[in-house]
Image: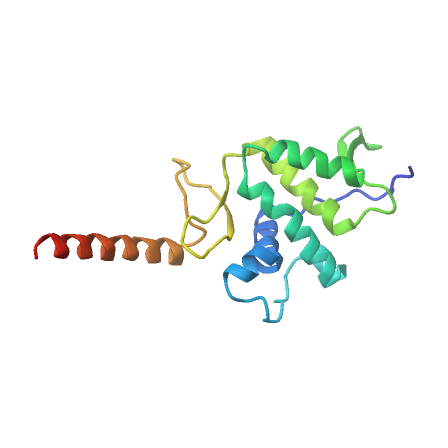
Length: 174
C-alpha cells in the first residue's frame, strides 16, 4: 500500500464539531433541516471535499461523540479501515500518513479527533442532552459538567424544567 508523501494535517476539533453538527444526517434531521441547503464551511480541507464526502465523514464521526465509552475502539477501527497510520517523518517527528486511495477529509478528521482524544480523553466528547437536539460538543468546562451543545439549548431545557415544576406545584395547590 503506497503512502501519500504529504502529511495528513489534523482537522481542528472545533472544525470537526461544526462539520458534524452541520452535515451529519442525524443532526440535520433533529433540527428539522434535512431539506435545507447545506451551509458553507470555513474549513480549508472542506473546500475540496464533495457534499457526499462531508456528509459521510460527519455521519462516521457523530457516533464517536455519542458513545464515549466505545470511542477509542471505534476510532481505531475507522483508522484501520482507511489505512491512517502514524509514521516517522524525515525530521524524526510522528506524522499521519494515508494510502493514496484514502479520502483526505476523512483522514484529516480522524487524525484531528484521534490526536484530541489522545490528549484529553473521551469524557470531553458529548451529545446535547436537550430534547430534539443531537448536536455534538467538546466539554471544555473545568468541572467537565457540560450537557448541552449551546447556551440556547441549556436555556430552553432550564425553562422547560421550570415550567414543569411550576405546573406540578400549581396542580398540588388545587
